[in-house]
Image (tube, rainbow, N blue to C red; front, side):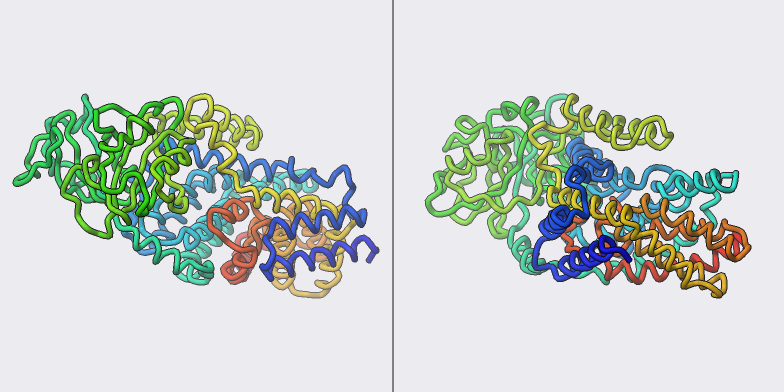
Length: 593
């Protein structure tokens, strides 16, 4: 072993020890390791920051922005309304979403599949009142599993098919991977849905956060029936089904500034009527998007700047000194002076019987405010209220749902067919979203999880340095020597275990390039067909479940799920063991030696 190899293995060991320790944030650890490697001349100075321009890093950043655009446009709401039921148990939800994710990943890039489904899963978790971390990791793992089923599902399959064609004269076909990959994916999905999610550790402070959110009761709010609405002429009770589906309670109806009582459910809706609702902010916005109702102020005028600037929803607590205490939103001129609408009031579970805009606000109330983006600080200073911690509330613009969906679908189709490079396709989607108004330019960089980008940009040069120094070749040669005289099934299991380990440190593409020639060499030394060994590498190279850096999908969920570096192996290790146990006999059955 050379000095460079020794230093790199020691550096990787120190990095993983620090990351598992968890006292320092993962991006600081990774970047510090990169700087040490540059100082020790293990990574050339001119290549130190190449990882930040690497396609994997760019894909992670672009996917986060694209996901924000899909959420903003209402495409996520469309999917959740159509497919997802927040009332499902967590295990049933994971099985349902995991099945969709695996099926999509078989026929489109699994990164793009996660980009589409990740915001759906986060929204569903919010509606169900649970932490998204419990379902995001299973979703990511299922997209990885589904990619193993076809040739185009994941890059390692394409690489191994190409290596087989170069060295053996014939490539694998589209569905050659399906018999083994399909069984492994199904077994993995069952494990994740039944057992795996229970192994995900709870985040520190998660219980306290849930209790804090529980104290914030549903808001009493109003949405207006605009002219030309499909609801005009219908009775109020005909809105109940959509309301229930979106977790909203319809309390009554206000007309011309007065609440209607008695048999409200049979009242025929008119333009300008206000539905009095009880809901959380996310549910309120989803109900608005589903029904075409509007956020309007007291003078029946929409908030100025809705089209040009985009909208922001903010929650704020009213202290004793607030300008609005003892007054209503209309009396303080909230819409006139701040171009802001009071959407709802939460008052410790108490019912509010007056119109929201004419309700006298008390100290301790929580206000749900709608305003042009960028005005949050100005509004809170003017009202002298205290903003709650950001819960990621956004205002959807359902007019752009098909624009956003169509752009994304065309880009994914072009990338899947090999017409355009995936990072370029995603970059075009981002530009199109900004130009068409799907995503405000002010949110473009806010949606990127920068610590994740630093982690990935720092680890890629370190992985490349290990490969260039001969570290991966050293591992491969040791594997061949170690397996001398072993039975075929044991060699396959050993090959898969080592390939998985490499894939958790390097990216899966680099792992496939390194491990595939080793697989062919092992088969030739035994005098058997190389196909089962290549298939073992194809399965194992994709199964990077122990760390967030082995696969782009695991990196994507790191920030949104609030995971620590050491959270992945708890579910990932038993899943990798299960993959080996299932894959080895299936490979020997389908691809005999």
